Length: 279
Figure 1 (tube, rainbow, N blue to C red):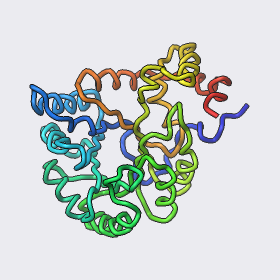
Figure 2: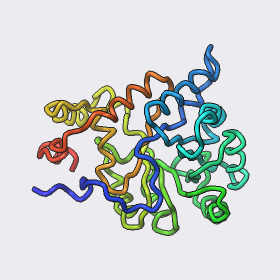
Figure 3: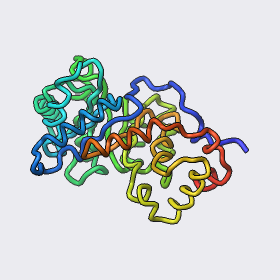
């Protein structure tokens, strides 16, 4: 039996292609403990040492941008990619504010639509932000623009109606949920890169659901843990260029990076039982 189209190996079809794995910055902005900013900065350093060269942030992530900028200021700027989000009505002010907090130029700017957060810009705000970001892209201030959401249908409409470089989908495409497949298919057809986050959900980490346990049992027959398979799975769709990993400590990002480096046998993805579970 042939593998479904969404499980075909990735192809180089996207115009803008972020690195395969990135560090999501949401937990870098958590309130400081006794160590102050040091744990977050050490987490970024550990990610860099593990080979990660893509770092995502947002003004909504507390002090994450400042901490990220401090950690990356010691690294050659040409070696890594930084993304952030537009939060608020004034897109240019938001971008320039992020750059000031980071102390770095930003490569990719994503507008969060109303599906990502009740406080984030809605569709009308996105329509207003897009030409502003396009102008910044044309000026060379940023390299790429896109949208971020948990709502794959909202992203699908934006990809259909606008010229985006990239979308960031939080959840909705993982071992346990492939509901966003129509969005990914559209992105593939239009040459839009897809970044996926949220693949290491509590269900995956703790196998606390029946579907997770069933998929885990198949993976174990191939010597693969469920988190390892979860990190590798999204890139089985040709539109997915990157997976974001969230971490709040050096030990956590090192452990995740070790999982990334472990190869997943190709036969796992062809296993008839797994294909039925993922259908």
